[in-house]
Length: 351
Image (cartoon, rainbow, N blue to C red; front, side, top):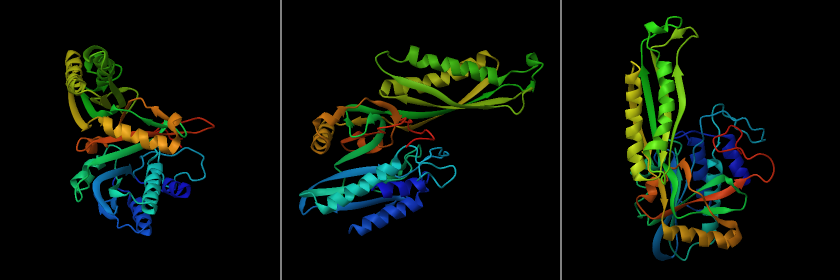
Protein backbone atom coordinates (compact mmCIF):
# COMPACT_ATOMS: atom_id res chain seq x y z
CA UNK A 1 0.00 0.00 0.00
CA UNK A 2 2.89 2.35 0.72
CA UNK A 3 4.36 1.67 -2.72
CA UNK A 4 0.95 2.14 -4.31
CA UNK A 5 0.41 5.46 -2.54
CA UNK A 6 3.84 6.69 -3.59
CA UNK A 7 3.20 5.70 -7.20
CA UNK A 8 -0.03 7.76 -7.17
CA UNK A 9 1.82 10.63 -5.49
CA UNK A 10 4.47 10.65 -8.25
CA UNK A 11 1.76 10.94 -10.90
CA UNK A 12 -0.83 13.45 -9.62
CA UNK A 13 -3.79 14.30 -11.84
CA UNK A 14 -6.27 17.12 -11.25
CA UNK A 15 -10.06 16.85 -11.30
CA UNK A 16 -11.67 14.87 -14.15
CA UNK A 17 -8.19 14.25 -15.60
CA UNK A 18 -7.33 11.27 -13.34
CA UNK A 19 -6.96 8.85 -16.27
CA UNK A 20 -3.79 7.09 -15.11
CA UNK A 21 -5.06 6.91 -11.53
CA UNK A 22 -8.40 5.54 -12.69
CA UNK A 23 -6.70 2.85 -14.78
CA UNK A 24 -4.46 1.92 -11.84
CA UNK A 25 -7.52 1.54 -9.58
CA UNK A 26 -9.35 -0.59 -12.16
CA UNK A 27 -6.32 -2.85 -12.60
CA UNK A 28 -5.97 -3.46 -8.87
CA UNK A 29 -9.68 -4.11 -8.37
CA UNK A 30 -9.70 -6.57 -11.26
CA UNK A 31 -6.69 -8.37 -9.77
CA UNK A 32 -8.78 -8.94 -6.63
CA UNK A 33 -11.51 -10.63 -8.67
CA UNK A 34 -13.81 -7.61 -8.77
CA UNK A 35 -15.55 -6.11 -11.79
CA UNK A 36 -14.80 -2.37 -11.79
CA UNK A 37 -17.03 0.05 -13.69
CA UNK A 38 -16.16 3.56 -14.82
CA UNK A 39 -18.52 6.40 -13.95
CA UNK A 40 -18.30 10.16 -14.60
CA UNK A 41 -15.34 9.80 -16.93
CA UNK A 42 -12.62 8.86 -14.45
CA UNK A 43 -14.56 7.62 -11.42
CA UNK A 44 -14.55 3.92 -10.57
CA UNK A 45 -16.97 1.71 -8.67
CA UNK A 46 -17.08 -1.97 -7.75
CA UNK A 47 -19.36 -4.14 -5.64
CA UNK A 48 -18.33 -6.64 -2.98
CA UNK A 49 -21.27 -8.92 -2.21
CA UNK A 50 -21.76 -11.25 0.73
CA UNK A 51 -23.60 -14.55 0.57
CA UNK A 52 -26.56 -13.32 2.60
CA UNK A 53 -28.99 -10.50 1.80
CA UNK A 54 -28.61 -7.16 3.55
CA UNK A 55 -28.02 -3.46 3.15
CA UNK A 56 -25.50 -1.65 0.97
CA UNK A 57 -22.76 0.39 2.62
CA UNK A 58 -20.84 2.72 0.31
CA UNK A 59 -17.18 3.43 1.05
CA UNK A 60 -15.89 6.54 -0.73
CA UNK A 61 -12.49 8.06 -1.48
CA UNK A 62 -11.30 10.82 -3.83
CA UNK A 63 -8.73 10.54 -6.62
CA UNK A 64 -7.74 14.06 -7.65
CA UNK A 65 -4.68 16.18 -6.92
CA UNK A 66 -4.31 19.96 -6.72
CA UNK A 67 -3.04 22.37 -9.42
CA UNK A 68 0.09 23.46 -7.53
CA UNK A 69 3.84 22.90 -7.63
CA UNK A 70 5.30 20.47 -5.10
CA UNK A 71 8.20 21.76 -2.99
CA UNK A 72 8.79 18.75 -0.75
CA UNK A 73 12.04 16.79 -0.97
CA UNK A 74 10.58 13.27 -0.70
CA UNK A 75 11.95 10.65 -3.07
CA UNK A 76 8.49 10.13 -4.57
CA UNK A 77 7.71 13.81 -5.24
CA UNK A 78 5.47 14.77 -8.15
CA UNK A 79 6.83 14.25 -11.65
CA UNK A 80 4.13 16.45 -13.14
CA UNK A 81 4.87 20.20 -13.06
CA UNK A 82 1.96 22.18 -11.66
CA UNK A 83 0.20 19.23 -10.05
CA UNK A 84 0.60 17.80 -6.54
CA UNK A 85 -1.16 15.53 -4.06
CA UNK A 86 -1.22 18.21 -1.36
CA UNK A 87 -4.35 16.99 0.40
CA UNK A 88 -3.83 13.26 0.86
CA UNK A 89 -6.07 11.85 -1.86
CA UNK A 90 -3.20 9.57 -2.86
CA UNK A 91 -3.47 8.03 0.61
CA UNK A 92 -7.26 7.93 0.42
CA UNK A 93 -7.09 5.91 -2.79
CA UNK A 94 -4.52 3.47 -1.39
CA UNK A 95 -6.60 3.06 1.78
CA UNK A 96 -9.73 2.11 -0.15
CA UNK A 97 -7.81 -0.33 -2.35
CA UNK A 98 -6.40 -1.93 0.80
CA UNK A 99 -9.90 -2.07 2.27
CA UNK A 100 -11.16 -3.78 -0.90
CA UNK A 101 -8.44 -6.42 -0.55
CA UNK A 102 -9.39 -7.09 3.08
CA UNK A 103 -13.10 -7.30 2.25
CA UNK A 104 -12.40 -9.79 -0.53
CA UNK A 105 -10.20 -11.84 1.81
CA UNK A 106 -12.88 -11.93 4.49
CA UNK A 107 -16.24 -11.06 2.99
CA UNK A 108 -19.06 -9.62 5.11
CA UNK A 109 -21.66 -12.12 6.29
CA UNK A 110 -24.52 -10.23 4.68
CA UNK A 111 -25.23 -7.25 2.48
CA UNK A 112 -22.70 -5.59 0.24
CA UNK A 113 -20.00 -2.95 0.13
CA UNK A 114 -20.03 -0.52 -2.77
CA UNK A 115 -16.64 1.09 -3.48
CA UNK A 116 -16.64 4.66 -4.78
CA UNK A 117 -13.37 6.04 -6.16
CA UNK A 118 -14.59 9.57 -6.87
CA UNK A 119 -12.92 12.08 -9.19
CA UNK A 120 -12.74 15.87 -8.85
CA UNK A 121 -13.38 16.55 -5.16
CA UNK A 122 -11.34 19.76 -5.20
CA UNK A 123 -14.02 22.29 -6.09
CA UNK A 124 -15.39 20.53 -9.19
CA UNK A 125 -18.30 18.62 -7.58
CA UNK A 126 -17.15 15.15 -8.48
CA UNK A 127 -19.67 13.80 -5.97
CA UNK A 128 -22.49 15.35 -7.98
CA UNK A 129 -21.09 13.82 -11.16
CA UNK A 130 -20.96 10.36 -9.55
CA UNK A 131 -24.51 10.72 -8.25
CA UNK A 132 -25.72 11.79 -11.69
CA UNK A 133 -23.92 8.77 -13.18
CA UNK A 134 -25.88 6.45 -10.85
CA UNK A 135 -23.49 5.60 -7.99
CA UNK A 136 -26.35 5.63 -5.46
CA UNK A 137 -28.43 3.12 -7.46
CA UNK A 138 -28.26 -0.50 -8.64
CA UNK A 139 -28.08 -1.55 -5.86
CA UNK A 140 -29.47 1.33 -3.84
CA UNK A 141 -27.03 2.69 -1.26
CA UNK A 142 -28.34 2.61 2.34
CA UNK A 143 -25.47 4.37 4.13
CA UNK A 144 -22.08 5.89 3.39
CA UNK A 145 -18.71 6.26 5.11
CA UNK A 146 -16.02 8.72 4.08
CA UNK A 147 -12.67 9.71 5.54
CA UNK A 148 -9.83 12.17 5.32
CA UNK A 149 -6.27 11.81 6.56
CA UNK A 150 -5.68 14.73 8.92
CA UNK A 151 -2.54 16.64 9.86
CA UNK A 152 -4.34 17.99 12.92
CA UNK A 153 -4.38 14.53 14.56
CA UNK A 154 -1.39 12.43 15.64
CA UNK A 155 -0.62 9.31 13.66
CA UNK A 156 -2.71 6.37 14.89
CA UNK A 157 -5.67 8.42 16.12
CA UNK A 158 -9.14 8.27 14.59
CA UNK A 159 -11.38 11.30 15.02
CA UNK A 160 -15.16 11.09 14.73
CA UNK A 161 -17.98 13.42 15.63
CA UNK A 162 -21.75 13.63 15.54
CA UNK A 163 -23.51 16.48 13.74
CA UNK A 164 -21.80 19.26 11.74
CA UNK A 165 -18.43 18.01 10.53
CA UNK A 166 -17.26 20.07 7.54
CA UNK A 167 -18.58 23.41 6.36
CA UNK A 168 -20.78 24.43 3.47
CA UNK A 169 -18.76 26.20 0.78
CA UNK A 170 -19.57 29.23 -1.35
CA UNK A 171 -17.40 31.11 -3.81
CA UNK A 172 -17.63 34.73 -4.90
CA UNK A 173 -16.10 36.97 -7.55
CA UNK A 174 -16.39 40.75 -7.24
CA UNK A 175 -15.55 42.97 -10.20
CA UNK A 176 -15.05 46.60 -9.21
CA UNK A 177 -15.29 49.09 -12.06
CA UNK A 178 -13.96 52.61 -11.63
CA UNK A 179 -12.32 55.06 -14.00
CA UNK A 180 -8.73 54.60 -15.06
CA UNK A 181 -6.11 57.29 -15.41
CA UNK A 182 -2.64 58.52 -14.54
CA UNK A 183 -1.47 57.69 -11.00
CA UNK A 184 -0.25 61.28 -10.56
CA UNK A 185 -3.78 62.68 -11.00
CA UNK A 186 -6.04 60.48 -8.85
CA UNK A 187 -8.72 63.18 -8.61
CA UNK A 188 -9.46 62.67 -12.29
CA UNK A 189 -10.08 58.97 -11.82
CA UNK A 190 -12.06 56.57 -9.66
CA UNK A 191 -9.49 54.15 -8.28
CA UNK A 192 -10.92 50.58 -8.19
CA UNK A 193 -7.90 49.37 -6.18
CA UNK A 194 -8.78 51.67 -3.27
CA UNK A 195 -12.43 50.67 -3.57
CA UNK A 196 -11.47 46.98 -3.54
CA UNK A 197 -9.34 47.53 -0.42
CA UNK A 198 -12.31 49.11 1.37
CA UNK A 199 -14.55 46.22 0.28
CA UNK A 200 -12.09 43.64 1.65
CA UNK A 201 -12.07 45.44 5.01
CA UNK A 202 -15.86 45.85 5.06
CA UNK A 203 -16.44 42.15 4.29
CA UNK A 204 -14.72 41.25 7.56
CA UNK A 205 -17.58 42.87 9.50
CA UNK A 206 -20.15 40.40 8.13
CA UNK A 207 -19.25 37.49 10.42
CA UNK A 208 -18.61 39.84 13.34
CA UNK A 209 -21.85 41.82 13.05
CA UNK A 210 -24.38 39.93 10.89
CA UNK A 211 -23.96 36.31 12.03
CA UNK A 212 -25.38 35.05 15.33
CA UNK A 213 -22.45 35.04 17.80
CA UNK A 214 -23.15 31.42 18.78
CA UNK A 215 -22.97 30.43 15.11
CA UNK A 216 -19.84 30.64 12.97
CA UNK A 217 -18.71 31.55 9.50
CA UNK A 218 -15.74 32.52 7.36
CA UNK A 219 -15.40 35.18 4.66
CA UNK A 220 -11.96 35.15 3.02
CA UNK A 221 -10.72 37.06 -0.01
CA UNK A 222 -8.01 34.92 -1.56
CA UNK A 223 -7.24 36.80 -4.77
CA UNK A 224 -7.07 40.42 -5.95
CA UNK A 225 -6.01 41.30 -9.48
CA UNK A 226 -5.69 44.83 -10.83
CA UNK A 227 -3.42 47.02 -12.86
CA UNK A 228 -0.62 46.72 -15.38
CA UNK A 229 1.95 49.28 -14.17
CA UNK A 230 3.02 51.19 -11.04
CA UNK A 231 1.92 54.57 -12.36
CA UNK A 232 -1.45 53.72 -13.87
CA UNK A 233 -4.81 53.70 -12.11
CA UNK A 234 -6.59 50.72 -13.74
CA UNK A 235 -10.24 50.77 -14.75
CA UNK A 236 -11.07 47.53 -12.94
CA UNK A 237 -10.10 45.37 -9.97
CA UNK A 238 -11.24 41.77 -9.55
CA UNK A 239 -11.28 39.81 -6.30
CA UNK A 240 -12.28 36.25 -5.51
CA UNK A 241 -12.93 34.57 -2.21
CA UNK A 242 -14.77 31.90 -0.28
CA UNK A 243 -17.55 31.68 2.30
CA UNK A 244 -17.80 28.84 4.83
CA UNK A 245 -20.83 28.19 7.05
CA UNK A 246 -22.52 25.46 9.06
CA UNK A 247 -26.05 26.72 9.75
CA UNK A 248 -28.66 27.34 7.07
CA UNK A 249 -29.27 30.80 8.52
CA UNK A 250 -25.62 31.84 8.14
CA UNK A 251 -25.68 30.29 4.67
CA UNK A 252 -28.51 32.68 3.76
CA UNK A 253 -27.22 35.80 5.52
CA UNK A 254 -23.57 35.86 4.44
CA UNK A 255 -24.04 35.67 0.63
CA UNK A 256 -26.67 38.42 0.80
CA UNK A 257 -24.42 40.64 2.88
CA UNK A 258 -21.44 40.03 0.56
CA UNK A 259 -23.51 41.43 -2.30
CA UNK A 260 -24.89 44.35 -0.30
CA UNK A 261 -21.53 45.27 1.20
CA UNK A 262 -19.60 45.15 -2.08
CA UNK A 263 -22.15 47.09 -4.11
CA UNK A 264 -22.80 49.59 -1.30
CA UNK A 265 -19.14 50.41 -0.65
CA UNK A 266 -18.43 50.74 -4.37
CA UNK A 267 -21.41 53.04 -4.89
CA UNK A 268 -20.40 55.24 -1.95
CA UNK A 269 -16.95 55.69 -3.52
CA UNK A 270 -18.19 56.49 -7.00
CA UNK A 271 -17.56 53.07 -8.52
CA UNK A 272 -19.70 50.00 -9.24
CA UNK A 273 -19.35 46.37 -8.18
CA UNK A 274 -20.72 43.28 -9.89
CA UNK A 275 -20.93 40.23 -7.60
CA UNK A 276 -21.06 36.62 -8.80
CA UNK A 277 -21.79 34.05 -6.09
CA UNK A 278 -21.76 30.26 -6.47
CA UNK A 279 -22.92 27.84 -3.77
CA UNK A 280 -20.59 24.89 -4.25
CA UNK A 281 -21.92 22.42 -1.70
CA UNK A 282 -23.64 22.07 1.66
CA UNK A 283 -22.17 21.13 5.02
CA UNK A 284 -21.22 17.56 5.90
CA UNK A 285 -23.46 16.58 8.83
CA UNK A 286 -22.78 13.21 10.46
CA UNK A 287 -25.67 10.95 11.40
CA UNK A 288 -25.57 10.05 15.10
CA UNK A 289 -26.06 6.31 14.55
CA UNK A 290 -23.46 6.11 11.79
CA UNK A 291 -20.98 8.15 13.84
CA UNK A 292 -21.29 5.71 16.74
CA UNK A 293 -20.94 2.80 14.32
CA UNK A 294 -17.70 4.36 13.03
CA UNK A 295 -16.40 4.81 16.59
CA UNK A 296 -17.16 1.16 17.42
CA UNK A 297 -15.25 -0.08 14.37
CA UNK A 298 -12.34 2.27 15.09
CA UNK A 299 -12.12 1.07 18.71
CA UNK A 300 -11.82 -2.51 17.47
CA UNK A 301 -8.95 -1.54 15.14
CA UNK A 302 -6.89 1.07 17.02
CA UNK A 303 -8.13 0.73 20.61
CA UNK A 304 -10.51 2.91 22.59
CA UNK A 305 -7.79 5.34 23.76
CA UNK A 306 -6.95 6.18 20.14
CA UNK A 307 -10.52 7.10 19.16
CA UNK A 308 -11.04 10.80 19.86
CA UNK A 309 -13.72 13.42 19.43
CA UNK A 310 -12.81 15.40 16.33
CA UNK A 311 -13.45 19.10 16.01
CA UNK A 312 -15.65 20.40 13.18
CA UNK A 313 -13.64 21.82 10.29
CA UNK A 314 -14.36 24.91 8.20
CA UNK A 315 -12.86 23.02 5.27
CA UNK A 316 -15.36 21.83 2.70
CA UNK A 317 -16.12 18.40 1.27
CA UNK A 318 -18.50 17.43 -1.52
CA UNK A 319 -19.08 14.21 0.43
CA UNK A 320 -22.00 16.27 1.76
CA UNK A 321 -23.97 15.35 -1.37
CA UNK A 322 -24.01 11.65 -0.43
CA UNK A 323 -24.94 12.33 3.19
CA UNK A 324 -27.89 14.42 2.08
CA UNK A 325 -29.27 11.31 0.42
CA UNK A 326 -28.47 8.61 3.00
CA UNK A 327 -27.18 8.47 6.61
CA UNK A 328 -23.43 8.69 6.81
CA UNK A 329 -20.32 9.56 8.77
CA UNK A 330 -17.20 11.38 7.64
CA UNK A 331 -14.15 10.72 9.83
CA UNK A 332 -10.54 11.85 10.23
CA UNK A 333 -7.46 9.61 10.33
CA UNK A 334 -4.42 11.03 12.14
CA UNK A 335 -1.51 11.64 9.78
CA UNK A 336 0.75 14.17 11.49
CA UNK A 337 4.37 12.99 11.15
CA UNK A 338 6.13 11.75 14.29
CA UNK A 339 9.14 13.91 13.48
CA UNK A 340 9.47 17.18 11.62
CA UNK A 341 6.97 19.85 10.76
CA UNK A 342 3.36 18.96 9.92
CA UNK A 343 2.67 21.18 6.93
CA UNK A 344 -1.03 21.97 6.51
CA UNK A 345 -3.25 20.60 3.78
CA UNK A 346 -2.84 22.41 0.42
CA UNK A 347 0.73 23.45 1.34
CA UNK A 348 3.44 22.84 -1.31
CA UNK A 349 5.42 20.78 1.22
CA UNK A 350 2.48 18.74 2.49
CA UNK A 351 3.24 15.06 3.06
